[in-house]
Length: 198
Image (cartoon, rainbow, N blue to C red; front, top):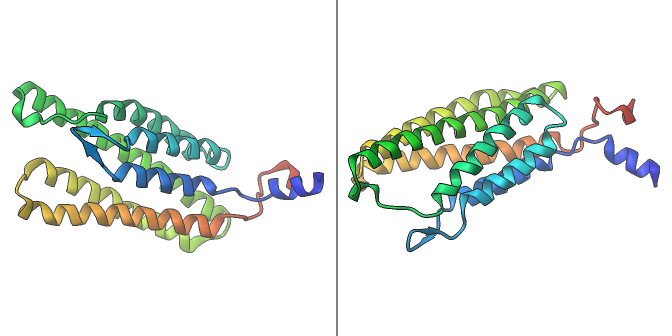
C-alpha cells in the first residue's frame, strides 16, 4: 500500500488544468433569466482557484495566479444580476467601463500566470514543443482579448460586432486547446521535486 502511494505521489498531477478548463466553460456560458445569471461566473472562478491551489505545488506562477482568481471571485459577485447601463446615468456608464477594464486586466494576468506556469513546467520536463506553444499562443490570447474588449466597448451594431465576437471565441478556444495539450503532455510525468522520488 505504501509503495503504491509513493508511486502515485511521484507523478505530476496536472488535473488542475482540467479543472481550469471546466471553470472556463462555466464562465463563458452566460445564461440569464430576467437579468439573473443562472450559471454564475463565481462558480467558474471557484473551480479555477481550487485548481490553482493544487497546481501551486509545482510552480510559483500558479500560486500567484490564485491571488488574481480570488479578486475575480469577488468581482464576479456583482455580475450575478445584469442591468442595462445605457438607460442609467453617465456616472454609472463611466463606472461600468472602468470596472470592466479592471476585470479585463485581472483576467489577462490570471491567464498569463496559468500559461507561464505551465510553460515553465513543460521546459523543466523537456516538453519544449508544448512550452513553445504556450509562449506563442498566450500572446494571441491576450491580444485577442484586448481587441475584442474594445470592440464590444465601442460598437453596438451586431454587423460591426461579428469580427470581435469571432476574435473572442478564437481566444477562448485557443486557451481551451492549450489547457488540454498541457494536461496531455505533463500528466503522469515523474515529479523530480518530490522527496519521495529521490
